[in-house]
Length: 139
Image (cartoon, rainbow, N blue to C red; front, side):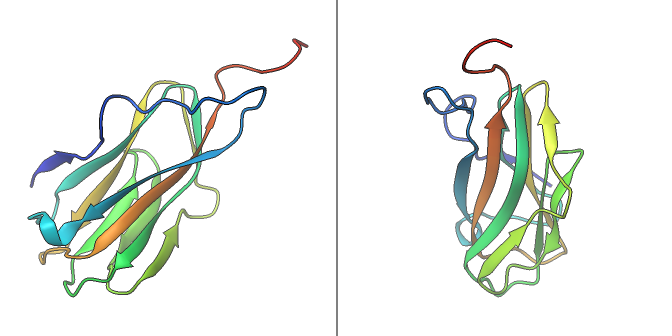
């Protein structure tokens, strides 16, 4: 089993904006047909900044695979998408009521399972909100 870090650059920061704390989407595409993988491999996809809430996360299968391997998306505490076989295109989103508050920086990770390789191309997405400071007049 291998641990891969697929984050790009340093820590993911909140996007710049004025006078509003709005939800925003981060995403990353992983092409498993170009990555040798076996059951138990982990792929760190996003580093989530401290002071964030992840209100939703999921997997979009962009190109369906033919393998019987499965992938799951989680952060070590919450499971946003339980093991799914990416053999047809479409979306898998987080389970109802699953969200996470990050008082310290966290990460979303893909984990492979089942003996056969995963060979699909997937897009991993998350909806985050910055909760570190309040914009506008102080109460």
